[in-house]
Image 1 (cartoon, rainbow, N blue to C red):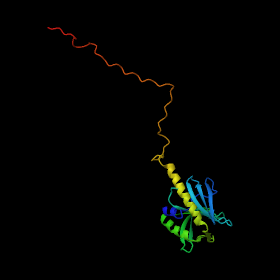
Image 2: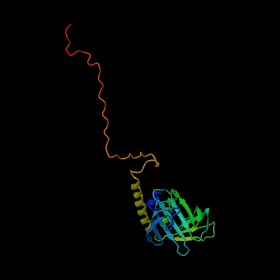
Image 3: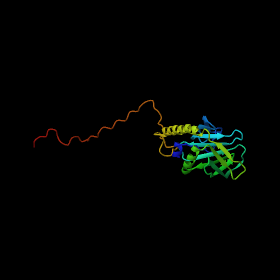
Image 4: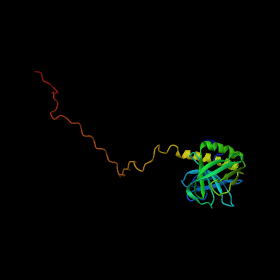
Length: 225
């Protein structure tokens, strides 16, 4: 994940996130070529940075998003006319430029396909993505024709995206440094506040030391015998 942040900083689509999803609060802040960058919070209220590209003709969208402070690279493909049974496992072939296509097993639901890259896959994807002009997505399990995605503008958007990841990571570190409890928080255990008083009560005086009732045992002026 660290290498991806340094180079493509990457992307990845948070499951449940899109720029119009209920509960998500993200802003598209930069546009270049066919790509745009966004940042904000996803439906789980996590800080995110992302990039996406869409085809206005059929509504196809590829979204790549990273969750600040989390590992993993998440992808989402969506199309409004898809009707995918929830929990379906669908294969997607991803070919970047003229590199060999790689198969990914995705989780499908309604109009979306989602999958995650591990660190080793991120490194391979990174190098290919930065050097190519297009990406092809194929769907061998269905009737959807292959998508050819232009990478025009992706490098410029990536540079802006790198700044987003750096700044939000720093913000998150600063917000959690020093004040957060080291363990799980609990809804109880704080001593109850004492009621206020209109005066300060004086402490009781200590009782005087006890004296012998018989008096002294020797006479102060003894007489000779």
